[in-house]
Length: 98
Image 1 (cartoon, rainbow, N blue to C red):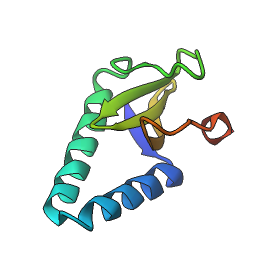
Image 2: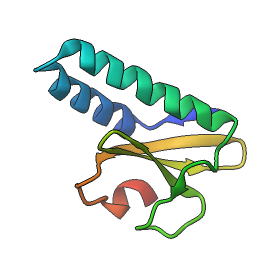
Image 3: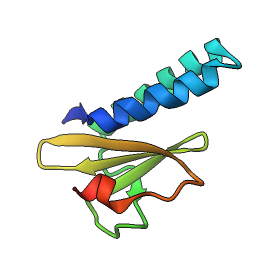
Image 4: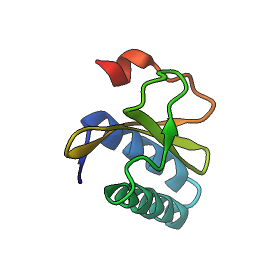
C-alpha cells in the first residue's frame, strides 16, 4: 500500500518538532524519525491502529506515538495520514472527514 501525507499532517509534524527542538534538537529529530517509522509499518499492516473513537468508522484509525495520535484513513490501495494531534487535544472531526 502507498502512504500519502496530507499537508495538514506535515504541518503538524513540523510544528511539534519545532516545539520539541526548542529544548532538545536531537530529541526532535528522533521523534520525527520514529513517527515516520511507525507510519511505514502501516504499509504491511494497515489495520494495526485502532479505530479512532470519535469517528467510529473502520477506515479512520490511529496509532499512538508518545503523547500524540497519528490519525489515518485506510483506503483501497493507499493509506492517507490525515493529521497528528496531542492526545489531550480534541480531534476536530471536520479536519479529518472533510
